[in-house]
Length: 442
Image (cartoon, rainbow, N blue to C red; front, side):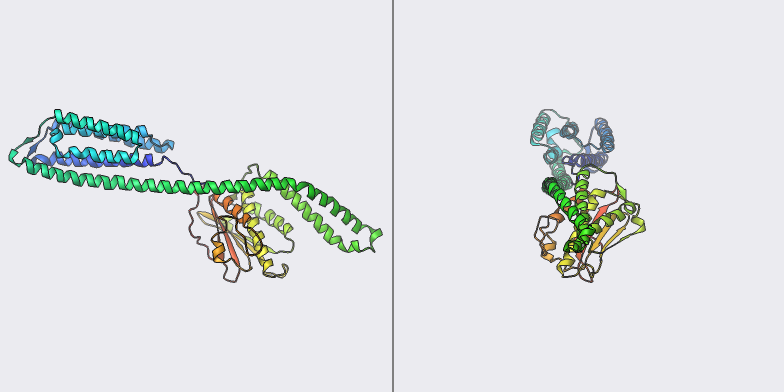
């Protein structure tokens, strides 16, 4: 299942607040330097410089807080984000107090701040901030330091120019912060939906695994009974005193039956053992025993395997990879049988394992009848009936196991006829693959 943090947007919000605060400080400093020379407005420099310095110091602590969250892999809480917004609203109120109070055209800067708060905080926090902003605005109606204009006759023009600048700054703030943050929230919702779908698939796969475990328990006794009967028949067939009876002609078949029954019992034993986590195995150690076990299950089939040198020492989850490849190889063998090939005369199945800096590739190639495009799109996503009698449950389990390992399964047509089933898995310690179309060409 993909790692999705539902509150990860809090870290993005705090980072954007930090950058936005730096941008506002730069704009305020520019206005402080140019206001008197350009507009003829005399400002109280000393208290404003103190306020700007306090904002800068607070933003430096915010940067340190961001680093702390990154090092500890945590996210800011709603209370922390609200404290950030309260500091910003308080700083805005203090600046407005020294620059005309409610008569300052930038007094509507409270609104972009509340818009940002509504995008990142629950409604109860936004309501509290709105009441706080209303209280500050109301106080600024009663008490403030009036602006000193060199030319009071131009007060209306200055106010209109200030309103225009306020509109531009507010529009930029909303477009930059709220719109981009909404995109982050939509992306988070999409990730949550994908996580829910993945959880549903895994739940269905777990239910199928539980059913398989129950069936494995139930067939243990019939297998034991068949093993006893096969052993008795093989003993009768190998008895020299019965050499002239027809049962002696079936001695090789009885031995094959015993071998297959022993293989079934070993598979059941491995099913029980696979419920315990096993240490990863290098591919060069795991491959030969796996191929041998599969050949015992399909003595009439032929399987050729190749392992690229750059992938030989890569560790894999032996239990899950064996499960996935067994399903793929079984389907490949049945596909060739469905084509009417006698297995001893059919082209051999191929298992080719390669790797690169990011992933391992397991390619299973058969020379069967191929997979119709409409069916191929559904394979691994849900149990579906196949063209040779299967129900697609094995491939559904294989796809689920591949996704749990951070990889994926896909199917492609082979140039010489048949199908290539491609399993891609991330290297040990690497991030899960995000695959939309594999880059393997058969």
